[in-house]
Length: 291
Ligand code: NAD
Image 1 (cartoon, rainbow, N blue to C red):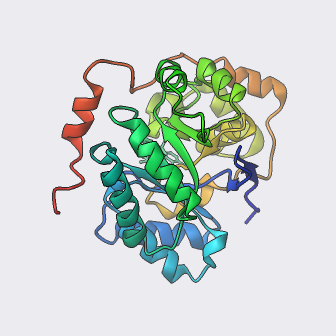
Image 2: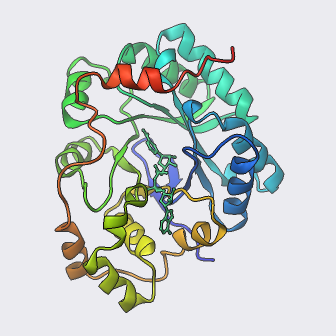
Image 3: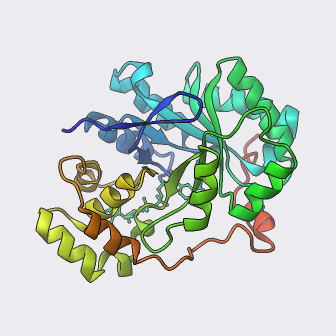
């Protein structure tokens, strides 16, 4: 088991550059099992969200792992329904309770619509109170980022990360330039293209994989790591959980990096700028259904 390198964020905190994502893993024992497996295999960074409905099991697995709290990085995300100031404050407390933690390492505004400045104020205050160590945003395209930046949302505290869709077919070139200017680290959601079969059959990736005796997933994740992007692939299968983190014992050459860069198609599966996305997402997840 190789040690997972850390990246330093613009607020000075160090985040493990590779973690474990739990989107769509149910809260029926499966999340508990997957997170405990990941922690035992050496992962020290878990990415969850209120809208994944599995914070309790993430927290229970962390507790039962016996690993000291300060050695594990936990990210969660505020859902769209809770961006009004008082709602956001309450939602942060609920996340802390569900996770069973005194603090959360990173909290994100999950979707960039609605009363963002109110949510951001509540998150800034929670950071000041040490309930959250780092705060960030997610799904901000260049257009959305510029809009909120111009309105002064980030004047007090700059987001430490922007978590967006990213994989070799969608390399976010424009956004990355903008984030670099602001010293904001990119986190990739769907770093494996959410299992995209076409991506896993790319001849270039297959060729590189056989050279290093690695699998395609490892080549993709290694490429992203060398690009300076934080990744947290998801899997419920022990073999994949194990192999997805075994990417720190080899290095892609600059030619190989250029080759994979050329796979970029400049477009992903989700377009946050499209009309109607906010409504679509609000209809998809109701985090207060059981209140
Ligand atoms: P992913 O790219 O991690 O792909 C996961 C899928 O890829 C798995 O379900 C499995 O089918 C397949 N897979 C995993 N390992 C593999 C391997 N070694 N070989 C072949 N196939 C493999 O997609 P994801 O889960 O959507 O994204 C990762 C994490 O990002 C999520 O779990 C979540 O934490 C986060 N996320 C955030 C947002 C957001 O809006 N902020 C959206 C989606 C996901």
